[in-house]
Image 1 (cartoon, rainbow, N blue to C red):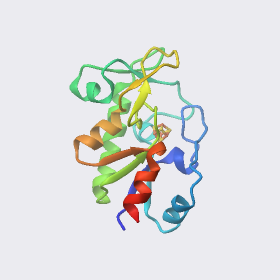
Image 2 (cartoon, rainbow, N blue to C red; image 1 turned 30 degrees about the horizontal axis):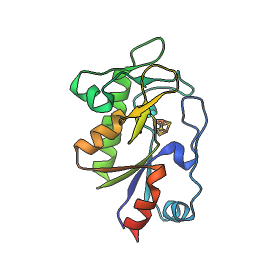
Image 3 (cartoon, rainbow, N blue to C red; image 1 turned 180 degrees about the vertical axis):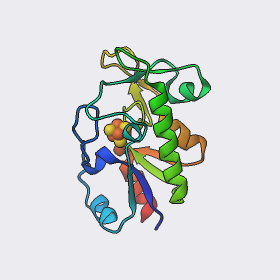
Image 4 (cartoon, rainbow, N blue to C red; image 1 turned 90 degrees about the horizontal axis):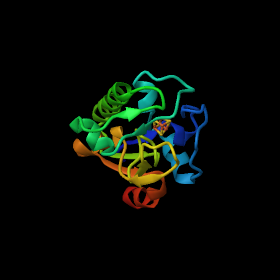
Length: 158
Ligand code: SF4
């Protein structure tokens, strides 16, 4: 069975901006982890950001806009786009090195989001879109699912 790239925070690693995690409770995930089939990555830490760190959101255009040079990743105080680009590149390198074709990443994140992300206004509003890492992985042929789409992954792995 092929390995799966997974957001480290979904495996309970306390790597979120607020020092917390958001673990998935799923027997199959536990079994895959025990068999070494899950490859965790936190793009924001891989990009050089600390824990904790200020929350960040993408300006309109989302992850694809960042790669096109038309969107930026911002905290309330600073432009952190380069950290997110570096982290996405590290995640892609890890996936390629492991021959990974599928990723299960955390929704809403400016790195890992795959369907919905915050709109850049820091008001809690969501828009359709994807994060910087998800955009790069998809551009390189890797299927990215959110944790709320895990049923598709379970079906695929049967
Ligand atoms: Fe989780 Fe991804 Fe955010 Fe890291 S960058 S904390 S893996 S959602």
